[in-house]
Structure formats: structure tokens, C-alpha cells
Image 1 (cartoon, rainbow, N blue to C red):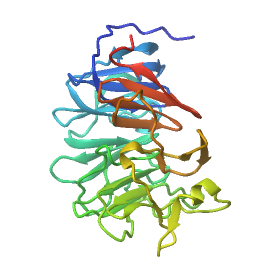
Image 2: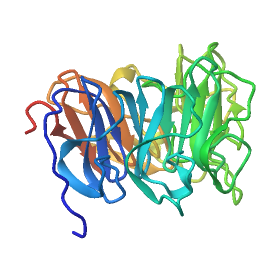
Image 3: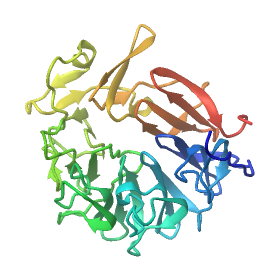
Image 4: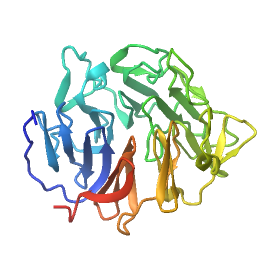
Length: 349
């Protein structure tokens, strides 16, 4: 109620990609223009002023974008040139512009990430961002380092511009509609299918992940991975996951987990990976028409009904998320209510 309502031209047409933050959503249309809606008190809508909008308004990116990622209260886009642009809250330097939050607490317009690097992919955590450098396969990260999610060996403080991840490994994917960077962890895959994880390693206690640290740690997989998140990897045999199972494990979780020779890795068997979503922080499965969810898990979320349309891109945040379907429409769900509703795109006006 204390911010102006943002207005703009509503003509995004069909969407191709969506990114979901804590209070806002952004999507790319077929012309590679970003449109955002929701709350934008910290400039997350990218229109040049704080505000909010119930309809998609065009963010003022300096060039067409090929991808979008979202953290808690910040959005980043990957330009056709390989440049990265971020906007929204700058707490902990998560925008990567080289400016500390005391100088630039937030940015209301897409602003170039410092350092002049060219990226092929971006992935965002709650308070950090990582990118895969074009041509070299090196990973760079910026933002909060409180859990080691920058991969440079630090577990405190922050970095306002990209720092290189401390490894000699070269990666082919950080995110390519198959990798997920959670609030505290990042995963990367090499060309030969090895998976490395960093983050989720606070000073004051052990990680809930079986493999994590302030620098990249290789997950001991029985074979090459074709896709991975920070907690799971897809192999020919199925999906292997490696959270540390502690305390009382809910029966619905045990029902889909099969111990392997390495007890810190579990096999998640599914025949419908194309209908399952890698969703961070919660394990959810259907039970007699309802969904049961437990905290501190990260496993595929069962498929949702998008009025018969097929999801081609999915993004989540917490228990909510959005999917772009083959019709170019954006469907979203929230909280414990796993019933998708039409949010944007053709027919949503």
C-alpha cells in the first residue's frame, strides 16, 4: 500500500521461459523481451521505479535476453551477447554490479554485472548468482557467501562482483533446464558426466546434504549423469539423491527411496521424469488425491494439470512455482495448493 502501482503496455504474447522469485515473477516472450509482474518494492519488475503490477509489464533490458533466473528478491537475465544483467534487491552484493548495498541498496533497472565476463548460463540462489563462462567452462559466482555457495572457499561475507569458483574442473552445465541451484547449494556437471556440488556448508553446523562444501566436492556416482541438481542426478538407472537422512523419515519418503551401496545416496525411481519437477526444499507426493509435503527434502514434485497443455519450462521458489506450456501460457501454483491457475500469456487478459 505504500508503493505506486506500476502501469505499462500489456502485450507480451506467448512466453518461452519463466523465473519465480519470492514476490515477483518474470518471463521471456518469443521476442526475447522480459516481462515481470507481482511485488516490486525493490525494483524486481525492472521498469525503472519501485512498485507492483498484477499484469506483466516489460522490464527495460538493454538487449534481448535468452534466459532468466530469480533469487529471493532479485532477477538476472542473460543477454544475447553473453552479458549478464541483474535488478532488484542488492543485499549482500547479489546483483554483481560491483556496488555494495550501502551504496546501491537496490536497482530498478536491469544493470550489467561487473567484470565484463561472457556467460553461457546463469543460475540463482536465494542470495547469490553463478554463471558459466562462455568458452572456458569456468564457473563464477557473486552475492552472499554465508554457506559457501560462492565456491571460492569463503563461508562468510559477500562479494559484489563475480569471483571464480575454486576448482580446476571445467563444466558444461550449471543450469540448462536440468540443473537447479538451491538457496544454499550449487551443482555443476562436467562433459563426462561427473557432478560437483558446493555450498550448504555453514560454519555453525553440518549440511543436510551428503556432499557439500565451500569449494566444489565431487559426488561419488556409479555412472555418468545426464542431468543433475544440487541434491539429485539423473543416470541411466534412475535418479540418485544424496540428502542426509536424519531423524524420523516420513513413510511417504521411505516409500520412494531405495538405499544404494553408499548409504548417503538414495535412488529415486520414476518413469515420468518429464512430468516431475525438481523442487527445492520440499518433498511432495500425491496421496489419495492430496499432496503431503515435508521440509528439508528436495525431490521431484509430481506433475500438475495445466488444462491438458504440456509444460516446456518450469521454475519454482519454496512451495510455489510456475510453468510455461507449449501454448506459450504461464501457469502457476502456490503454497500447499497444488492446483495450477493461468497467470499470463494468451487468454489470460
